[in-house]
Length: 222
Image 1: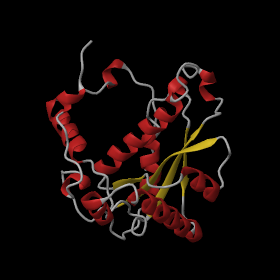
Image 2: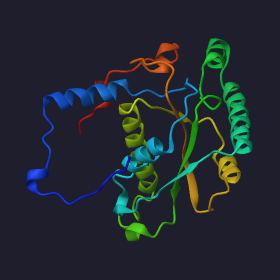
Image 3: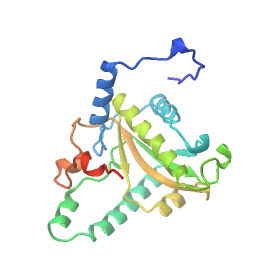
Image 4: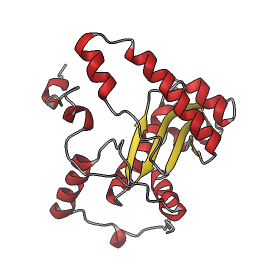
């Protein structure tokens, strides 16, 4: 699959009707943070196509600061498991009582099952974009990578592929393990593959960790 970029005329501009918007809403609702994967391989064509879609994300100054590393080496994968286990044990120590018991039961990664492991970095010193928009808010470089990850996540779901974000890791250890340039910073470590199950409710809500809160509680006026 190849994503072709072309110039458009006014006649080429698509109309996103009500049926499309309903499907789009379903996509948002059914996007999940996947931790349980089937062992079916994900072809390079599918992954590369999803990454091409991710590259359509907005970026500050059109800097396109995302850098994706496909982690395929068996030693590095095992080391990622070790990094996660150490960080997860440290996180467990932050809880006590029933919260600790519940935390210990949570499945918080798919490292042993996902056919694809993908590290997403931000190139903090990229010359693309000529620094536009970054002087006052340099963190927008990181936000640009997050935007690309979000498109990847939604595009993957639309193609029947699941994505899981593993955040319980030490970023500096991952940077050293993957031997990336010193100007790169880790934004996300992703597990990608076909999910074992489909469900509309978030994993942590199903496990009793945290329910969703009404969005109205997070909207303010000034």
